Image (cartoon, rainbow, N blue to C red; front, side, top):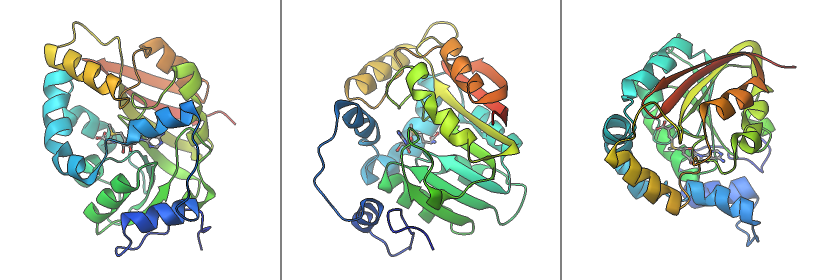
Length: 254
Ligand SMILES: C[S@@+](CC[C@H](N)C(=O)[O-])C[C@H]1O[C@@H](n2cnc3c(N)ncnc32)[C@H](O)[C@@H]1O
């Protein structure tokens, strides 16, 4: 049985229930400014936004703003997904829904600070064994999520998380602890310094999303990402596609 602090999913659970279970009751809590920034980064993921997310982000923004088609990220999923998979920041679950798993009944754990994305993704993957857990990637992975994952996906999450890579890179260390020795962490993130010239659409989105705190990647570059991944893993591969760094990391440091 999962500790009551974390989300035990039921299809009938409402978002309010999920938050209540996740926090041990709905309470007023004063947040520090860095906690506020972390919360601001997940605030846009309302049910209304999630309904248009696949068209707006997965299809249009990926191609026309960031110059990296969703198929590039999907290829990472198809290459690296394992039977026991942890998905961090699933959004709408588009990639999990379209990817090919190495088994017909994968065990998927979802980790997100947003109850809406957990609810949306869990409802989308009815045939998979899905366990949603509320938590921030900046904190150690909650015990309720389990450990010894074959694969961990963290797609388009790190450009949302506040701080430089030297600060938010702790996320990779938190995740490395729950990965099997022979497991893989993979994903992608939008960098401030991509390849070539950013599109006008990309510049407009970067400005607007940064102003509302949804994006926090103005300091992010490939070197910082590599340093952060190497602090947690012995083997790191990064390739650039437009403004997006696609990465895979093996051999977590113990
Ligand atoms: C841009 S969406 C990416 C969704 C999906 N992975 C994709 O590639 O389309 C960012 C996701 O990361 C989650 N997220 C942002 N900050 C987080 C944090 N500190 N801890 C856990 N999840 C976070 C958001 O709630 C959202 O689900």
